[in-house]
Image (cartoon, rainbow, N blue to C red; front, side, top):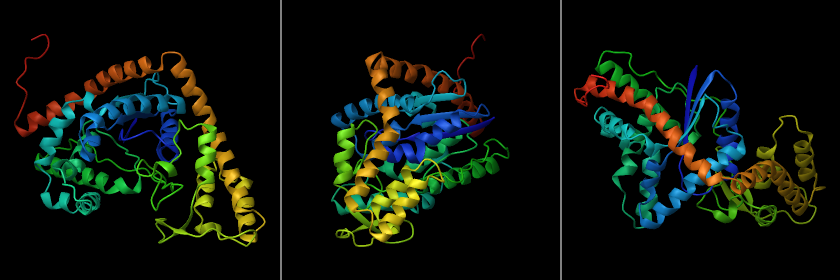
Length: 360
């Protein structure tokens, strides 16, 4: 079996970008019995963006919400090849992080684009940079190497971290003259960038008015979509910047329009004829911007309706209790899977636990 691992930080509600870019792929991967799927909630990573009493309460609620969203989207916690767990349920991951940090050059961490971007944003806002941001990629290496994952589906912004995990695995194997860690790989075709309805970046917590959450009502989706800005790609990587909408029935340019990009992402079938009609209608001016937005809201709601219905059913029964049971049981199973590997690593590097084995 291929062991597939991916995680989501609990820094807010799951949204349409999470679903289109990750969660729907998780569901598809989990339905293949040849895949051993580990989907963890990266709450230790969540601490890097600020630890406080208020943030702690929000994170605990977000973790429960993510589990419910996973179930509503189609993940089956009863499947033998699926684990849904909180990162903090496996304390051995933090032990492995320390060990891996001792074989990771500081220069590699300082050269990470993720760290540089976060550092510059925090410094620009007059805030300090915590050490967790620097060590974040080593913790991610431990997330990956601890369970000996083979495949790690990630977005483009996390690929350099998987590359670090690959280098770390090779470095560890070479240093201790063993083929101990398998070399993880990413998954081709994953990690799409879903633009927000507002702002210049992808859909996310930083722009709540431009983000469609999986729990949003029909009315909330309609309101957000109708308030969407137009966008122009500033470069081929689809980082977007604002432009004025076209007036009346003047021809538009769909390839530089945020709303058309979202239509394209919402299209679930590659040969869906609707997307062709939207593209043509925009180019010829026969599809007005307001009507295009109404259609987008309808298509988003059609996509989200089964998820909303399932989540409502879960909450009406024993959803929160079920989510907690899954976190406890799957966390126990995840630890049972990962702990033996970390114990072997500790023995290899000379810091065994010196615990009496069961039955001895």
